[in-house]
Image (cartoon, rainbow, N blue to C red; front, side, top):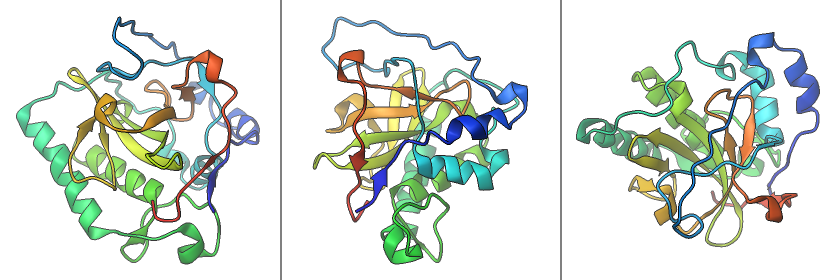
Length: 218
């Protein structure tokens, strides 16, 4: 069974990158009187370690793990670009068959793009992110996110930051949903300021984070 393991080796890896890729971002916290995870915008609780699979992916795809040249905090959500999100989500979900890394690569954890029309949850996420960037979406608004799903198992989705809230693209669902309307517990995601930096979405009283087992068919 695959696990989203956190990578302590990431500290050595990030130190080998140029200074502009280090953690100098500031996280803006949003307050709300609404109950936990029932708000439009995710709340961040400081830095955390990334999944080890992401660390390995970045070693092999360094150009895709650096801060983008242009920063946008959020995208203005229009009917046209929301439709584009839905079309990309639906098209990639239909084009890729879900298989485990163990079935495809003989390895428990392997973050990469779908191969031969097959992949697991993070492979869908990476392809959706790359596709939307190619369509002109700012990288800083497209963030890989780790959650616990309805079975309390690890799962990856793509968070899209808009002025109308944070939405998720999910290989388990055709619809693009606002994050708070899902049944997921949100664990961690990339920082909008720096894709190499990951931030915790768990309140401090729930830290440190446990290792999260992923389902066999994400």
